[in-house]
Image 1 (cartoon, rainbow over the protein chains, first blue to last red):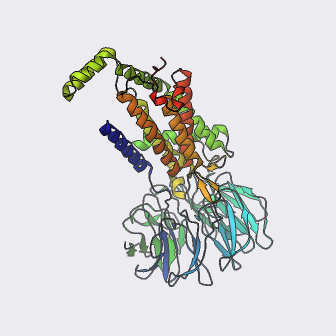
Image 2: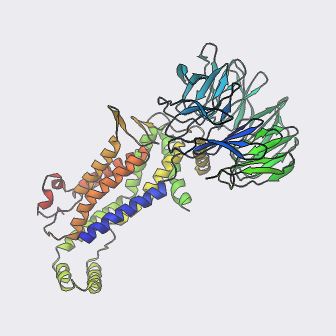
Image 3: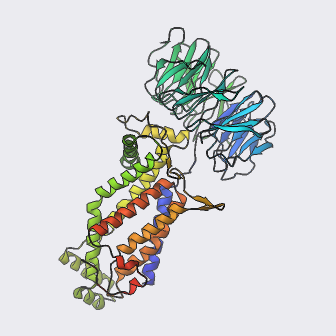
Length: 357
Length: 262
């Protein structure tokens, strides 16, 4: 009978292990965050934030030096005018840190033990104040030394997108289907504006108002006084922030449609442009080219008429919005051979970056 | 394949129930409870056959032919197995009937865990996976994101209640307790001290609560809600069929010798 007891015990252990293996995907996983200045690209992916030399793709530093299972970074790091690089953790430890962009040394760290959620969204720095939205639905307000200087503001819903300012108001999209408008001079919130669906990305500042895409599969134009108008539609959820460029608004949806809206008459500039799969990243406009990245792993340059100028496949899936660093376009694929790649305007790959283990 | 036949249907079913219930706080927890009831109703015939199978196996332990071949072929395992199969055939017993419902539970538990995590979408990547999972007929724009609050819990995370700075995993304790209760109540009484089935069941009554309690400690609390409701419904089912062995809850009940109620 002893053998049977042992057999049963081991069978249960094996069962537990199988169940754990089948369900035991990492609890938190996401695609990388990316930002850049003229010298460095800052890539947040998993346990580290990397600084990469934009001239050659060399790693300059990583933060932290050793991985901590409680700390994970996926938000776009934010550079401030006074020389800080801000990012919060998506891990079970909700620490929010300020780094020296040149060295990666920690300037300050706010443990944020009160925050119940993750820092999926990037913060906004406006008038020497940090507005940090958390997925617990609160907007936390800090000074430039990381001290909370006001009570957090409960907006409701998970906050996944960076706040945006037009110089007077702060606009915060929420997954609760509402756009929240904060007057930072007095801390007052306007009545929230119903978007008809969750909004996982930020608004775009336009002339006399903002543009918002959402899971309601449309684009709304919203004025600071709360007037809302649907100006265009899509055939699926709109994930990325629409890109405002003079009199044109570029946006895409999860069915893979890429749109160019003429804002003078709210008419589409081209018909049915559908590269190769869902588009979650915002479109990047540089000069006369519009850069599109797709979940299928394509990196495409379009001209203003919607014609494909060139197309590259860096590999993996691309969810992160590409960024411009000097004359290079940086692309951060997810689950690819490399973590970052740089291309020039002709589509020539300048370098790739793969972190050393 | 797993995605197509398990995760996708379970996720859509959960979302559909949530949509029907309304999208307020606590509704996702209620959706999990209703989902569990539905699964229990669907597997009711299987559970009934499990009870019947366990009962038949139990009775077999006291069968004279069975006991005779155990003695006769004690040293010839191959012959013993052949004779056992013969008796199974003669008496119309399927020795695996009592295992099948348990085996079916495993993919449901794994699938439900994945469905809960996906439906609650803690990160943008999870949300993208959810977007691919929902059937075109589902109009989920209005219900996403789901409200993961249920009573004091966040159904997407392991649960604990802070007491004097210590996180007490109440749900894991309730899961372990209800699992133990269910196993005890379904444990048949036996007059045979060498009854292997009863001994195995006794071992199960120790290991299963520990294992499910550990799962509850580790995984999203939504899965713990499933375990608890599933256990309670299991107890109700046994009680409704008159097979719950309440005497097993008494101290020293394992030593009692009265036959199981038929």
